[in-house]
Figure 1: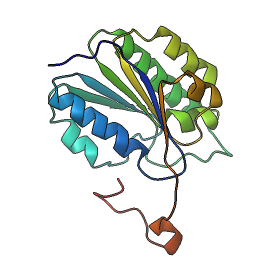
Figure 2 (figure 1 turned 45 degrees about the vertical axis):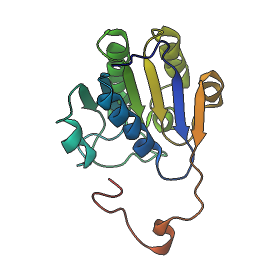
Figure 3 (figure 1 turned 60 degrees about the horizontal axis):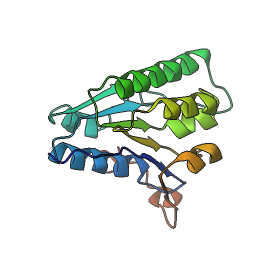
Length: 176
């Protein structure tokens, strides 16, 4: 196992498809090298995402889901949705500081912050607490400029063409 000497902060953002998929690709690589990963799903509670069936079978990979099966309405955020986001951030902090994980993914944390479920300042505080050997990946559209500045790696997914624009809905196994 080649353990990284220094963990970095990565941000996958933008309007294009593939942010979570890119993060899961890193989790897969990490698992292949014997590293331990934990994924914290913000805003993706009970929805049946296909990757979770496989992730639960991989050695050294765990995850926790927060939110509800329904999607959040950014114009009508509920206190229950805010509470779920606070719990997700607390779980990310716990995992990051536990000493048990080399990689922690905060999936959709950028959206949760942009929509006011959790303050961006709280995410920045989490970065301040990151142990040097822990890699953090933050995914989701609308990444706060301060997170982008603090990150070591930022990738913006740009939508060039998307089947949704032609009436093709999300497909199980491909899109979720």
